[in-house]
Image 1 (tube, rainbow, N blue to C red):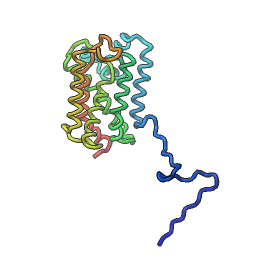
Image 2 (cartoon, rainbow, N blue to C red):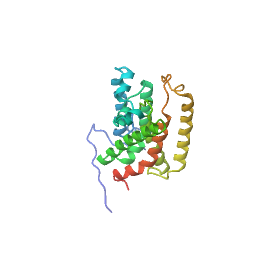
Image 3 (cartoon, one colour):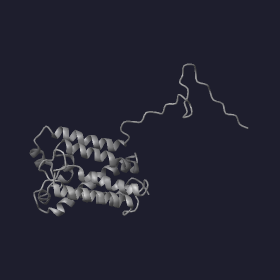
Length: 234
């Protein structure tokens, strides 16, 4: 029989604790338990608005907002720049919270390695771009301006729904999680479509880009798997 020997700790040194010990204290949980790419993206939304808030909103919108008419005039960069500007603090903070909530499972699935981090950020941006294009499809050639990360955040929501349905991996596109969250999101956006910004703090008379929200969600549901291949998931 083999005997195991453990060196006793030196006097004054902390002794190991176990869950059965009366003095056991679990390690404190971090305040934000989310992968660093999600935290970085959330912070970038807040910092970007902090800088933006020093300038008049009409000036910011003219320089960065997306509109179908500008896209047709040769400004595809607005598909990305519009994701980092917001209408007010409430708009920016709601999107930051949305990203923090739904981005965490997506980032964990893609993983912490370089390929996974790149896949996460590309997934976010592509969902945001497709959300803008979904908005443009229903407002073709119009001057309607679109700002905010809601479409991209909706893509994270769609991706998270697939992961919930697959218990950590992309599940069926029509799993209970995807259909349940999708129908709930459609219902919420239908309400916003009829009420405009009346139910959103600080929105005033501004409309809500519900078209971008639904297009972003659909993009997230469809693309969570293909971007997983980019991250080396099989």
